[in-house]
Length: 250
Ligand SMILES: Nc1ncnc2c1ncn2[C@@H]1O[C@H](COP(=O)(O)OP(=O)(O)OP(=O)(O)O)[C@@H](O)[C@H]1O
Ligand SMILES: [Mg+2]
Image (cartoon, rainbow, N blue to C red; front, side, top):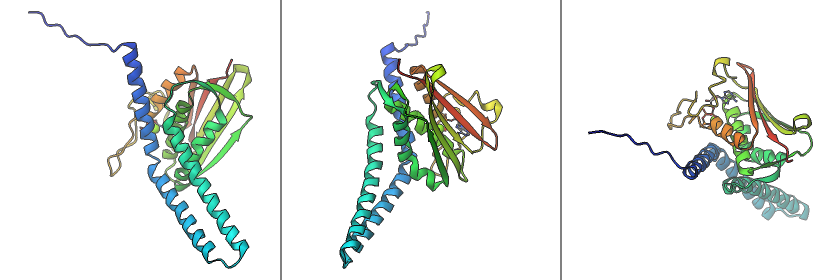
């Protein structure tokens, strides 16, 4: 009797479907790490709204009432910006490429992560040179940025500086996005491992949540699909710089 082992290879369509599912799952997992910070931020915003509403109701003059209403409006607008970027992030699973303002995508992810970063004593510095555009799937580029920013935050457990830069590199016809941190850095012998799926140094916490090691491998996959490049430079104890390059629209 002959025994044959058959391994079914997925069709190109099935493989693409699985790849999309992985991207979506990884995206939700990265947004999930922001959930508690966003909930706290909403609590703060609601406290502001409630307190100024009480103040406004008690106020005996017009200018104090206007001042209270202005504070309420500002707090409401901030909450709307946060929900807007979260909903935008969740919705953008359509894989249609469009010409996008890269700075606008970076700004949206920074709104989403602002509270999480400040809670961890991280200062954010941005430098945008012009408003370069690239033909990309916007949700996927935001996913890359979110992964890089969360990694940077996790590399700075005692706080630090996060620098995000966007510029156009005319010579190579690329948009360059740099995400630099002042965190723990990566040892030279580990640099070639970090883009491998499931490579993680993040141990599970008391709730059993550790790293999946999928963040950077998903980044690499998305960047390859966009015909871009990703590079890392790192010094242990000083920090890391991740540079993403995406082609400018032709
Ligand atoms: N900015 C950084 N500073 C220091 N080490 C980093 C940085 N970014 C990534 N790494 C290292 O690369 C590893 C792989 O990163 P990756 O994002 O793929 O997975 P993860 O962050 O461990 O898990 P997950 O993304 O699921 O939370 C990390 O565990 C960490 O050791
Ligand atoms: Mg990660």
